[in-house]
Amino acid sequence: MMTPQRQEARPRWAGLDVAELLALAAGDGVSMSRFNEDNRNGRVFGGQLLGQCLLAAQASVPPGRPPTVLQALFAHGARADEPISYRVDPLQDGKRFSGRRVEATQGGRIAVSAHVTFQEPAGGISHELPPHRPVPPPEQLLSMDNLQAGGALGLDGFDWSWFQKPCLELRVVDPASHLPVRNAEPLVSYWLRLRKALPDNASLHAAALAYLSDYWINTAAITHHVPASQVVASMYVASLNHTLWLHRPCRADDWLLFSTESPSTQGERDLTKARIYDRHGMLVASAAQECLFAPRNSS
Image (cartoon, rainbow, N blue to C red; front, side, top):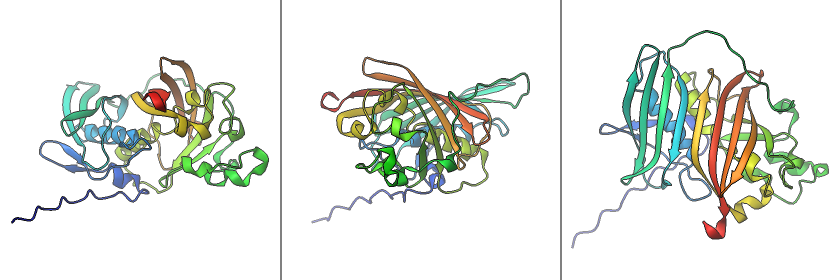
């Protein structure tokens, strides 16, 4: 009797090096994920899918054209124990712009359908808005790992470090007004950075920014209705549509300020917008995300 071959387990990502997570392996006309990061819903984290869609598209564009916008529809949740394939189709290669369509698939199902636009560098007139509110620098704020030590803030009794990842550090502006209680207004500002430095590669930093743009962006909407400490147990949250506009290059391994607001929550859908600044106050990107926000017993 033949002994059935044992299926080799997928390699497990160590959880720290985002460059390692996002790197793609060449396949038969497609690119493949080497590792997968799961989220708290038991599916691949959307930021990984966004970052890898952007990397796959950038590899097919003439050098010197940075990405300007990534628009993505999350169609089906992807399993963390199976590889994800990325196929890129050219839409445009003009004098100023290039366009690509990217489909991330797994087991014959589309996980993400994305469009990415690239532009030849150009000058011209410019303006940008400041953050919604003045904020202190990240060095003056406590990380989620240390919030319980600040007993005077009323944050004892919950392990806030659970909201962080080994690969990134999160510092919330005015955490006592946003974490243990509902936000008075659907506005939240927070600083994010990767813990491990990235190589000096503009394409990788853009992809890492896409990765970060899917983390915590919907908090302004969610915690206006449910305190952060109660969200995971009571609500099901999943990304539906995501757009990232890249205004200028930035380092994704240095502190980035996310100034977020939610203009609407309707029909179990939250919409949140974010302006993303570097530590010097330069607006480097903008983002908008619609997510599913439903009671867990109805999901």
